Structures are given as C-alpha cells and as structure tokens.
Length: 93
Image (cartoon, rainbow, N blue to C red; front, side, top):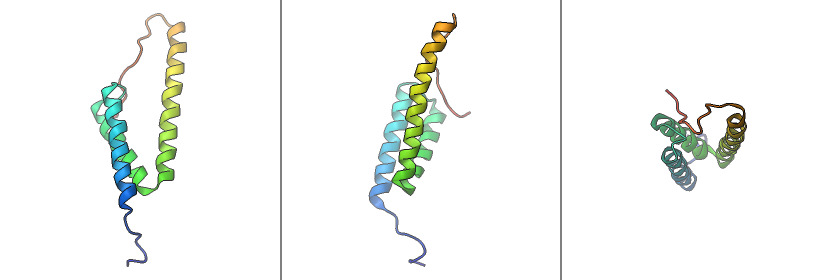
C-alpha cells in the first residue's frame, strides 16, 4: 500500500497552510471577504497548495487577476453610475 499512496509532503503542506492563512486573513482585514468567504478561501487554497504547487499557483493567479479586473471594472462603473459604492464584501452565504 505504501507504493500506491504517496507520502505527505510536509514542507508543501506547511507552506500551503501558511499562505492560505495569510491570504484569507488579508482578505478579511481589507473587508474584501466576509468571515464565511475567508474560511472558504482558506480551505480551498490550503487544499490546492497541499496537493501541488501548480494547483495553488493557478488558483492564486485566478484570484489575483479577478481582483485586479474587479478594481478596473469598479472604477469604470463609478464613472458611469451616480450612486456607485466602492468596495463591498464577497463571501459564500
């Protein structure tokens, strides 16, 4: 059975948990994530990084580009709409 199940990479798992904690707490602190959104982000990102760095990097690239595009879209929307409010929490509820 040892040849079928690969050993746990302790370094990758530890780095995955630390990075996931940093990102989810940063999103919560900046109020770009709700509490449930931060918990979900922590779970998804820690699992993605624990499985492989490639999965984690892909997830972070998706998150980063989505955040940047949201800012660009928000500034454009602010110019077009009168009552536009900047920011807002994202989360899964």
